[in-house]
Structures are given as C-alpha cells and as structure tokens.
Image (cartoon, rainbow, N blue to C red; front, side, top):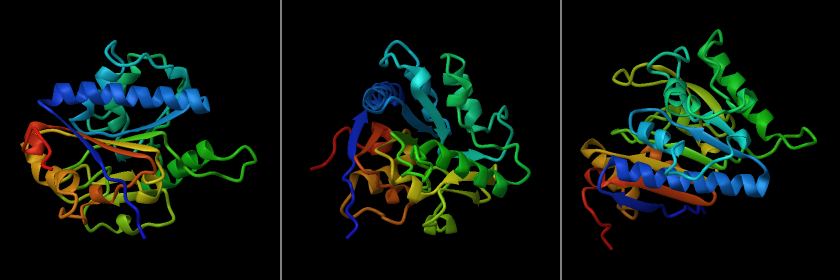
Length: 256
C-alpha cells in the first residue's frame, strides 16, 4: 500500500511573510543536514514565487549557513543558456550566488550547453548519481536533504506536466521533457518522481489567487482533492510542507 505523508500547510498573509518563514525553515533543515552528515544538498526551483525566498535565505533574517558545505542542484531547468532571463540558474545567480561565497564544486547546474536536451538530461543524471554514490562506488539512494518546489495553475511541479509520459518514469532520475505550448520555453530537463520522492524534506511555496484551485485541491482538501495533479504525486520520506498565502489558500485558516 502506498503510504503518503500528510502535508503540513502553513498559511500567511502575503508572499513576504511566507517567504520569510520558508527561508527560516529551509535554513534550519540545511543546518541539521550539515550537523548530521557533514554536508547538505538543496535542489532549487524556478519561477517568480521563490525570488523573495532565495533573497531571504542569504539575508540576516535566516539562519547563518555554512555555504562551503551546501551543494545546490536544480529540480528542473529550461533549455536556455545559464545567463538567459528564463534560466532557473540565472534566478539563483541573482538572488543567492552573488551574495554568498559558494565553492564552484558545490554548484551543480543542468548542463544546458550539451548538444541536445537528451544528452543534457543524461549528463545531469550522471552528476546526481556521482554525488550520491557510496564510498565503494556502487551508488546510493539519491536522498536530497531538501527540494524546493513550486506549483503551476495546472498542477505541474518542476517540469512534470499533467498527462506527460515523464510521470510514468520509474527508472530514470532525470529526463528531457517538452512543456505544453502555453509554457515556453518548451524544451526542459526535469527531476522525475522517483528522484523527487526520495528526498527527506520537500517544501512547496505558492502565492496568488491563480493558484487557489490547485492549492486547495492538493494541500487543503486532502481527502477529496485531485490526485492526478503532478504536484499531488510528490511524497518525500520525512517532511512535506506547503507555505502559501491567503490568496492562494482562499482562507486564513485550514478547515477542520
């Protein structure tokens, strides 16, 4: 039987307050990982919502982090150059990487300079596998300490879109995908559910009235909500937390 974590949902008045709380929580989990395992692995997302969160993560309001022991990955990436405004790496560069002294070997971007998107996906999976390999070289579970995810109005997360074949993947950790026509850039690389769901902690953030239907269905109406949304298929091993604002929740409290 598929045992699913019941998400913890935190509702805040606006994007600023939810971002501040999420930054504190993420910082605490990264500190715990470094203390317990000597390093921390964090996978970032893209989009507009996390910009303020990432700014706050490197501010004085979040825990002071040992960045030399923190490794950054990306849960998905648009197939554009790293300095393109549509790049998820570009967002992290503007908000995090310009503010902290992170060793270059701790930064693990999707290799969008590869000849093809398929080659880029394969190379990125190889990098993830190498990072999580056991000391004897036999490989280990790809257990990210924390993955940050967003959610689209259609219920997609990372670059896993409704009804896409990537949702059925059981073996590969990273795959190329083509987004729907209304979600350019269309060529992308994404983590798959088998990789996402081995994470210890997953944090979703969502803001704005346009997200209300999916937030209520996935995070709030957990017994009767829509289970076919890709974001509803996310099920980490330890903690699943949603930080949302009142506009996206449609309420300042959780019923029941």
